[in-house]
Image (spheres, rainbow, N blue to C red):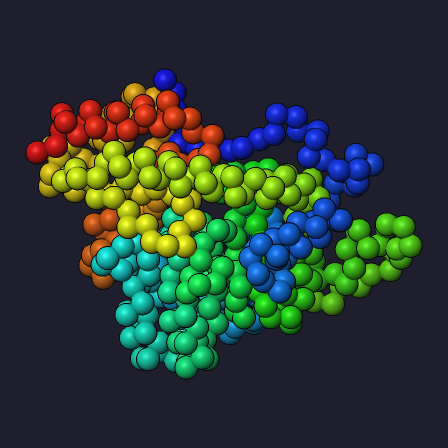
Length: 384
């Protein structure tokens, strides 16, 4: 049996998801993007959503719109994908990496407050809702009020997540979402969005997302449009297409059903793997989006390494992943910032033990059983 780490949901008939506007030849940003933004805003409880071509674009544009100075710093977790950090560097900011919480995978908030107290050049905190488990946003918002900070959430994993009783994305600061191919919904492979309740920020991000132009193509060339436009500031090319938005709209119609299936898969993993002394299961709290299911191998209880385990599962046709290699271990960051590995003991331990199992709605019961069966076989053979 061959089981991919991820398999996106694609309609049986792709033509069904494309509306009249696309069939007439309008493929780029237009009416479908506007509709997608409205549906996302309603779902998240956010005042504004700007659809973009990636989560990275959302992170970058939010910082560009805030116009932080070159000597400003931002705090982010070391256990994340590189885009969380790159976005600050794009605007000339310097990263301060923080270790993972000792009880899980999230940013260690105690360290964050200590850093902010001591360093007034910190202007931004970029928390990551790792795997779909939300950070304590109320704590960060209170910190922001106290020290005049901007909280920019990397919500790539967190479309369905809830923090402190509110949907992630319902914020006076900003949250960036991903619709990449392996996310809980996708806009056909690439895509993202920025959510905010801040009118000025939303307007600024929208403008910066398309060259700093005053009027996009849809508003220039549609019926009763006018060709006239102006460029009022230096912008970027981060807009989402109608083609992609149509794919996202179809996906949003299924989000509740797919979330239910994710819950079923997580429950089955929990029931089958609990009580195994060599395996630590994720602590999935209320409000988790179930984007990733990340286990930890207690390496002192195994006669093989984490990488050996992955290789053996791959030989059995099962795709696994590791989320993530910590930023301080990546060559570019070691060279340019000389981060001290000893400052990140929890992330170092996690990196050597974590494995992400397949978790997606069209994973069948037979496939899920096969994954579990082979984990248990390896446990029986190689656990101490």
